[in-house]
Image 1 (cartoon, protein in one colour):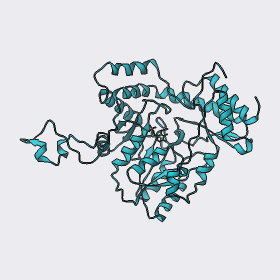
Image 2 (tube, rainbow, N blue to C red):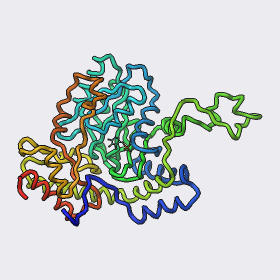
Image 3 (cartoon, rainbow, N blue to C red):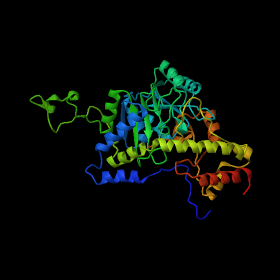
Image 4 (cartoon, rainbow, N blue to C red):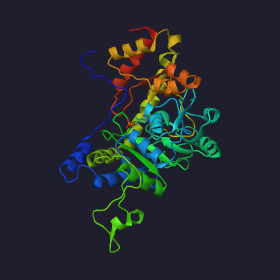
Length: 404
Ligand SMILES: *Cc1c(COP(=O)(O)O)cnc(C)c1O
């Protein structure tokens, strides 16, 4: 359609205030680590009810830092439990710290890990001679799994929980706490990529209540270096007349450069001030999708909403029975595209990726597969207008009813 802009499945909303916040940093003295890093970390920690927030280069780096901070031995036996419906980074960063990945199935309708699928995955890990150490629940589309039950099961198996909350900044879980300030997760990882709910360009963060983990995360973010004299081991190099030498630092363990810049943090901080408005708009759009999809076709529904929580929706996932509708997903996506409507599949089950399928050749996860066969993410972002919504629904009607 001419004269209409393309509607992606997700995009950032940058205001004049956001631009001014970034410009102010560019005119100042700090391009990389500066006062905006501390300010954004404080705002994020405050928002999610965490004692500490450590911002970093992206959400993948956040997962890498969190998993590295656990200091688990890469002995070929330790493993992480990861739901198969997620972005590949969740599993990949477990591999990056030398853990084997054992995939958990998901609920076929919500794409969330459940206690049943976690129990099966734990059993499969043990059958394979592996020791489960960490569970990475994904707060998919902005909804939390049943964390109370998951945490109880994980604890009986001696596993800690690291939340992948890349989709879920602002979500209030069933226990009434914000994701990131969870009593269950030792650490929570966020992404602030432009398609996520708030944008830093590239950016991410880890939140935790544990001061020792926060310190480990900061050290790992900066090459593994410390300037804390109480940590110095090479005391002859470190001190002159009992005082720490001014040039001196030490590297007790290996780390990375996963810093976020001051201008990224200025954008994150400015966007954080708009989070409630973003969530309100996303919530209204989800309610409207829910209403309209009900009358659009019997073959389409919106991802079911979990009880007792207040999700900050990241994705508008439609579940479509393509076989019953008599049209392939590829054909639906092509019709949407011809109307200028973007859509995407979140996600291809990670256990199906060739790298992981080679490690687990006999694995089948029917819940994840059944979800995957039906999912299609529709445009969802704060600047999506009523007119845009009409266009999405008209395009879907065309695709699913064969009408123009
Ligand atoms: C986006 C995302 C990540 C990775 O975040 P980046 O900032 O893109 O590195 C990890 N997990 C999930 C579930 C995501 O959606």
